[in-house]
Amino acid sequence: MVVKHINSDNEFEQSMAEAGESKLIICDFFAEWCGPCRTIAPIFERFSSDFAQAMFLKIDVDRCQGVAQQYSIRAMPTFLSLLNRVEIGRIQGADPNGLLKLINDGLSKITKTGEHVANAAEREWLGQFVHSSERMAIYEDELNQTLALSIIPVDELRQKATFENEVNHYLLAKELLNWFHSFFKWVNSPKCEKCGIEGKRAGVGFPTEDEAQDEVTTVELYNCENCKEELRFPRYNNPAKLLETRKGRCGEYANCFALCCRALGLQTRSVIDNLDHVWVEVWSDQLKRWLHCDPCENVIDTPLIYDKGWGKKHAYVFAFAIDHMQDVTWRYHYDHKEAIQRRTKVREPVLRNFIRKMNARLASLVTDERRVLLRNQILTELLEFLSPDAQLRDGSEAQNQGRRSGALHWRHARGELGAGDDKKENKINEKPSTS
Image 1 (cartoon, rainbow, N blue to C red):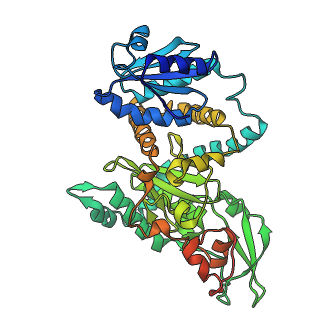
Image 2 (cartoon, rainbow, N blue to C red; image 1 turned 90 degrees about the horizontal axis):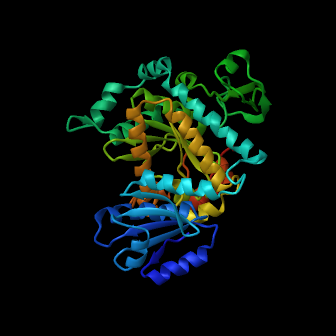
């Protein structure tokens, strides 16, 4: 829903008639000379897109004095929620949290029964994210972090990341990525220890008892075409075990790297998408925003690499921290309207309700100080999402490059080569692998 600018009392009356008796109306009473009004304007604009079931009006009090008097507007900005012309909620001041609550409270009064309640298919789809959220606790385990710190060259990385006697989180994450990229190795298919050649895929097997203890649920089976030896590739999900094996694909890379980030004290989020890729985000106190980190590509702070470089078209991208979940699709896809059209797995009111309940439960487990800090981070992030251009990295080669990790045929099959590398496909002969 586009914000409607109301410049006269007559225009306001026309909008009331258009809304009818059942549509929620959110009014922003503002003045051109009001600084706080300008500050919160982009957030109001964004909320109009997020809550398309409501009508959003921006009312200039100097031009609509009759309406301002009718609703007793005495300070700017003032936000009202109206239903059939009747005021059902009000806040004063540039308060994004208050505005969001005003909208949600208004919608709760007119929401049709069941509109925000998940059906069976939606519950099944959303259920996977409960596990993703709960899994973040493994990175807080002191023993796991101690194991990581015993391997990471902590002093060296911190020294390189120190600027003006302060550890810069962007530099620390960048140095950690560089180190990790040489520490961890990509596996297309396992090599035969006798013959030194990669095996040919032969199917899927069951984990041994020891493998199951390290959270292996899938074992890929291969055969050496030379000596016919069976080769096993267990897909470990225990990040501490991955510190030992030091190999895998994007899932193992992101899993182990997330543990390393937490061991260094970085606020960390695990990021998953609907197109079978995973990566990590870390918070920068200096930049006041989350940084995209892809450990298998060794790329930092280039969120549009998947959209503009790989050619992936996301519908959903979610980030999970120990104390919250966030829909970060808008960071990783430039055309927001295009992404919204692809979001068909769950109704948007249901998704918002799910995330709200998840975050309320997680927030109850943290301190008041952390809760305030987290709220400010989320608001800062919402502001960032308002402009797709905020994710562009002009001059970045990585932003426009296709995927580099993995066998060429595998990347081609996944449609991740990008326009430039796709032409090389017929010139290079590599064995395919399976993610």
